[in-house]
Amino acid sequence: MTVFDPEQPYNALPPLPPPHDIETKSVLKKCVTARAALAALQQATALIPNQDVLISSVPLLGLREAKDSSEIENIVTTNDRLFQYAHSDPDQADPATKETLRYRKALLKGFESLAERPLTTRTAVEVCRAIKDVDLDLRRTTGTHLRNHASGKVIYTPPEGEAVLRELMANWEAFLHDGSDMDPLVRMAIAHYQFEAIHPFPDGNGRTGRILNILVLVQEGLLDLPVLYLSRYINDRRNDYYRLLLGVTAEKAWEAWALFMLDAVETTAHWTRDKILAVRALMESTVSHVREAAPKTYRRELVETIFRKPYCRIGDLVEAGVGNRTTASKYLKDLVEAGVLQERKSGRDRIYLHVRFFDLLMNDSNEVAPFPPT
Ligand SMILES: Nc1ncnc2c1ncn2[C@@H]1O[C@H](COP(=O)(O)OP(=O)(O)O)[C@@H](O)[C@H]1O
Ligand SMILES: [Mg+2]
Image (cartoon, rainbow, N blue to C red; front, side, top):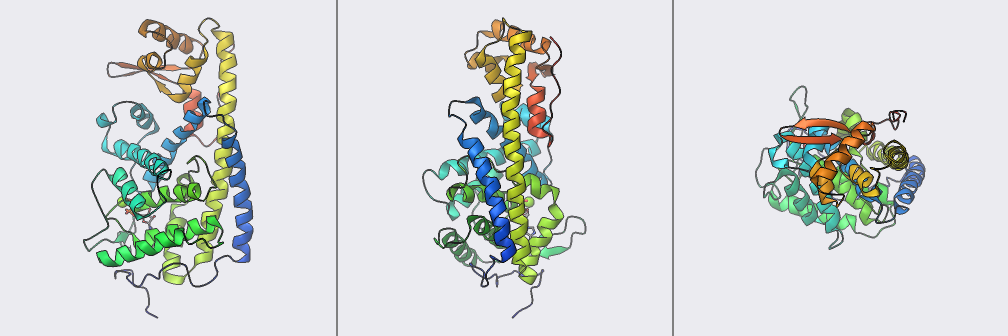
């Protein structure tokens, strides 16, 4: 057996499935709790009626995922810029914000593609194109290396040669659909390692791979909506993530890798479910507060709009059919008065920030500031 050399293209990357049984006792045990957490999340989202605003509010968590996943790659934007440009003029945003917003678009695009056709290499190419906004394909050039962020030392060199990459990707694709009775979460973990080890694209492999994880779970029927955002977990443990990926390559340390990904699923599923319940609770309390503090202004569509657009503009209310510009502007001012929104200037535009909702989406804590007394 050849020893793994980080400086040499790893063309000896073994095809899937891994030769030995990864579903050890501890892995299977962890599968049970992770699957239970995922089922609870699935139940929380399945109960949301289609016309409910929660259905359009929850995907805003995708902005959070986009931010975390991009941060793993040192693409850093602010919550503020992200939300500000999410609903208007992304073209005017700075490059990091643009790239982060493209991640969310790529995720939605990948999710929609599953209704048309199964997850394949083509899905990966499309997702990566959407993230990078270039017409890329599998790597044809040599010289792609993964380096340690701090020291610049090469830690891994992916396989080279277009034919080699095509073959490895075909094997990855076949593995995703091989119909064996492997636990789908273990399948996701194995496929994610393999995808990153193949590193099929010149750039964007990390982010594409993390989107593919969500798509695998949707495809396996474990999620209806693409709402399991693992990047927060990974971002918090970026060093472990890198170390464990390398551990599979250098030492075949599959079990530790699988346990990491399973814990990511379990922790994130709990977190997301709690988040969704907190958003629902905030909706209810906001409705009662506005009814009491501004009874003449309260209407359902108004409250719904600020849960769809935490950075709301007058035009958003007009578009939602709440009223003309004058009425919409008055309503927003009333909501500022009632302590629900905060007014901000953005160029010539006025933005109304739905503070509690925004905090809930972007903070880990589910506590929100109390409403002012009426
Ligand atoms: N030792 C490793 N082997 C394979 N993949 C790795 C290893 N270490 C990190 N990675 C993956 O490579 C990604 C970075 O690759 P890159 O193409 O730059 O993605 P992006 O542009 O999304 O940053 C990391 O996010 C991680 O998923
Ligand atoms: Mg990169």
